[in-house]
Structure formats: C-alpha cells, structure tokens
Image (cartoon, rainbow, N blue to C red; front, side, top):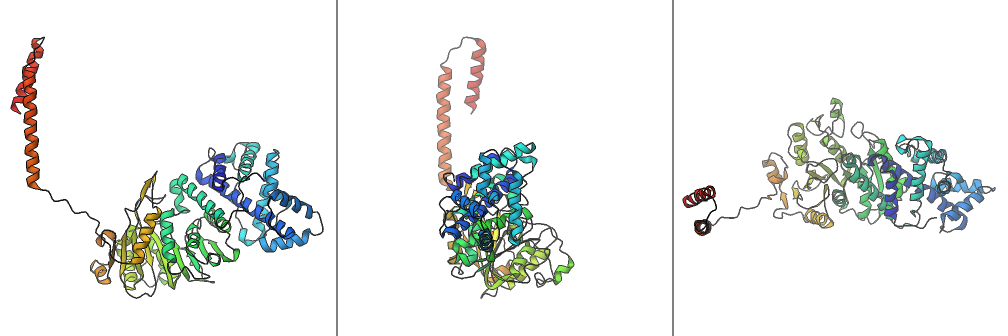
Length: 531
C-alpha cells in the first residue's frame, strides 16, 4: 500500500479531483461513498488475513495476495463462511479496493467491477441495502463519455489509496469522516441544513442530553431527524460506556439516510446497535414495535416545515394530550418536539434546536407550550447566537425537556454573544460551549447571562418564553455630566474663535496679483468676521 499520509489531508484531497466537475452537494456523495467502500474492503481483507494468520496485516497487498491464493483452494468455502458471519458480506478477490487500485494504476480500471462490488455488498445483508445507490458511476457529471468518467473515478480511487483506514486508532477514522461531512456542509451552504448540525450547538445538545447518564451501560439514544447521524454519534464523546450505546434514528432523505448508515460503520458501531430507518417522522410514529422510549433524545429538525396537521393526528398518542391542538400546518416545530418528547424515558433528557418563534407564538402553539409548562416538562431554554446554521441566519434556541420532575421552574440562558465570527458563519469555541454548560449545571441566575424563572413568573408572562423577558441584557446608559459637557462646549468655542482670529490676521496680511483674487478673499474675510 502507498505510504499513509495524514488521514484528513488525504481524504479531503479526494475532493479536489471532483471539485471542478460538480457542486459540493453532489461530490460529497462520491467521496464519502468511496471512502466507505474502501473501509469495508480493507476491513474485509484485514479480517481474512487475521483469520488465516491470527494477526492483523501490516500490508494490505500481502493480505490481498493470500486471499487470492486461498480462494483457489478447497479452504475457500470455510473462509467465506467465517467472513460472512463476522463481516455480513463477502467480496471476490477482484472486487476489493486493492484490486481496483492496481487496475487504476495500470490504466485498466473497470467501472463494471466497482459496480459489481457495490452490488455484492448491498445484496449481502439487509444492513447494506441501497447504501451505494447515490454513487452513480455512469453520471455525466464525472465527464463526457466512458473514458473520462472512468478516469475520474480511477483518479479518486488512487488518491484515497494513500489513506490507511485499518490502523487508525479509536475514533480517528470516525472523526475524520465527521470532518469531511462538516467541510462539505461549509461548501454546500443552505443545502447542508438537511444533514449537518454545526459543532458548537451539537456539543451543547449532546452534553446536556448526556448529563447524569455518562455511566449508563446500554444507553439508548434517539434522533428522529438524524441527518448524517452526527448528533447521536456525538453522545459517544460523553459516555463512559460508548461501545454499548444503542442508536435509533430516522431520516426522510434517502441519500442522507445512507450517509448516516456509513457514518455509523465508520465509527465502528456494531450492527446490533444500529437501528436506523428511512421514513417520515411526522407521517407515522416510529419506533413502535421495539424500544419506544429512550434515555437521550437529540433533535435538529427542519425549522417551521410544513406538515399535514390532519384531524386524525388528534387521536395520535404523540399529540393528543395538548388541549386538543396540533402544530399548525405551516409550522411543524411543535409536532417534531412532541414526537421526540413522547419517546423520551421518564428518567431521560431531550434537547432540541428550534427557531425562537416557538417561545412566544400564540394560538395552537401557545396552548401546547402552556400545557408543557404546566406539566413541568420544559427544563431550560438556551438562546444561541445568530448565523450558526448553514440553512438559516436566524437565531435559534435549544429547548431542554424532562418528564416527571420536581418543580416547574425554567432556566433561561442567553448565549447569543458567546461566539466568534469565522468566514460566513458564527462559531462557538470550546470556552463558549463550556460556559453554557456551566450555566446549565449551576442552574441559577447570573446577571446578563441566565435567569431561573419560577412557574408563577412564567404564568404572569402568559406562558411566553421569549428570553429577553427573563434575561436582561440591556446596558445602562452612561450618565451625562452636564456641567462637564457645558465646559467642554465652551472650551471648543473659545478654540474656534482663536483659530478664526489667527486665520483672519493671516488673510489680511496677504497681497494679491489680481483684483479678482483680492475680491474673493475679502468676501471670505467678511464671512469669517460674522462667525
């Protein structure tokens, strides 16, 4: 194998091959798909080598050589049986990434072989169904004609070969994949909203959702609008038992759903702990037939999306206990919130990002909000800086919810100034994130930053949760010393008079070469005398 370079640098350099041919939202599919295929292929060869030699290979080319040899023997069937049991898929020797790289280096790359490898993986197990659907190896975006299209894919394959995905320790590979997703989100702009939550808000959401649950073994995390799965996977960073977390997620967009599935594997999440579904969260409830309540619910749904708000939903258990009201058709924010809250365990924590309108809008949303507050369900409201998200510049907030807690007070945090400006987006640095968590955990009023409001105060405000009603961030106007101001004005006037007098004196001493100039200057002198 080619000498391994810095993983991030190699993976990102693969984008350079595609960048001039299509926009970021398209080439992210090719790059992330090919990285995932390389990971599956390399892992497969490494596992085969381990089964044969009881050790991991140093060189995948040697693993490929041994695999080719044994596939010509009577032991091939037994090896394939073991590989299928442990990997959930099998590959022919000419379907591996190593094989594709050799062909690419010899100008003999065959797209049909790569497509066959994709098909084999997808057909091997339900886990992989449709995973490579979006990686269109025959797209005109890759170039005009078979030769140019094949050459483009071959070039990406050669560039990615420099990345060692097998010997990466811990979460290095998963974190590199997250980095790629974040970079694509930055390049994609508004389209990124469907698959990516920026680092700052994501860390706040996950740290809050995990608070008090760090030591729980077999923790269950749920995100019904999971995008690339990054929010759920971030919870691993705050668990002392990360290998035992079970992930339940749903995503509407098929391509984004596939991205989340790849993301899970690249973070080495065991297949038994992945419970992901491609579907519409607001259309029909899910999950309903396995685990239905979760320790941590994290959500960043599409803001103020449209939904049917059909009358039948009033009998839906998710929405039926809120004064007979449903979230309005034009703003599904509370529909998403109530769906997530319905699936929260009695002992769990939910954190959701929504636009500020949910804090104060009236009508049906006001009724739902009032019911949640009377039940003590809303635990905290955190105002984030504006221009944090790729799909909107409006300010957003995090709402934290809990079930059956003592008290109905609500902690308000104004974090709108805790950011740094970076290129097009505002970014929350680690110190900003830490400050929000400090305020959240201390749960007490702090001047200009936080306020712990009693239920009575909220009731007096007609259940309006608009943050400025509770956290006063206004600055007192500096008192003006009128005497000092008068003295300053007098001094300035005296200085002006002195300067004018000096100027007049100089002008009157001048001599002129023409009558016209003398007249003009004399007129100016008369004006100065009047000042």
